[in-house]
Amino acid sequence: MNQKNIFYLLSLIAIFFIGHYYSQLNISPVKPEIIIINNDDEVKKQKSNIQSLQQQLEDLNNQLILALDELKSTSQKLNLSASKIQVLEEELSKIQNAFNLSDSSLKKSNTKLLENEKTLKELEKALSDAELDIELIKFDLEIAEANLRAN
Image 1 (cartoon, rainbow, N blue to C red):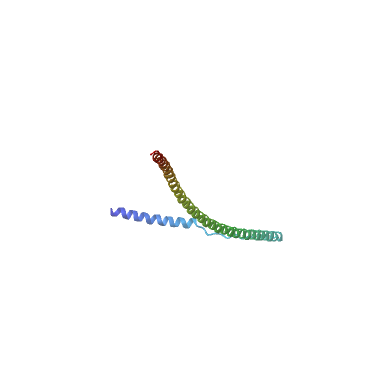
Image 2: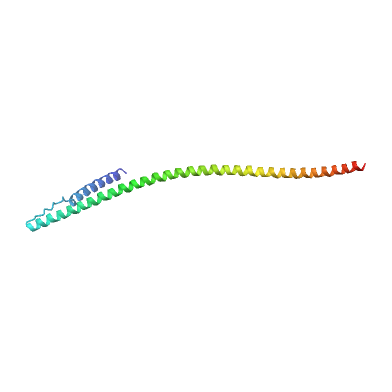
């Protein structure tokens, strides 16, 4: 068992050194490229390219500034819209509360109206019964008067 551990340890050390030397062989330093310009035409061409690139960079910078301005104004519009939405939601909530109060009041009024109609029907029935009683009493009174006159 001890020999196995020693073998694994030596194998790992050997693999480490092999990997280290292999990586040293594959890594070569970067060689700088030197551009040699011998001709005035090439110098002018390079200056022209640099100026063209600078102009493109300025144009892109201007586009970026415009895009940032547009983004800022859009952000302000978005914030304004968000605040308007919040105000509208608050108004809607107030209107909903007023509607709920009105609905509750209407239900109470309807309940009271139904109670009043029921009471009115009861009173009409009582009135009808009273009129009938009055008619009966009148009839009895007429009979009693007729009996008195007959006697």
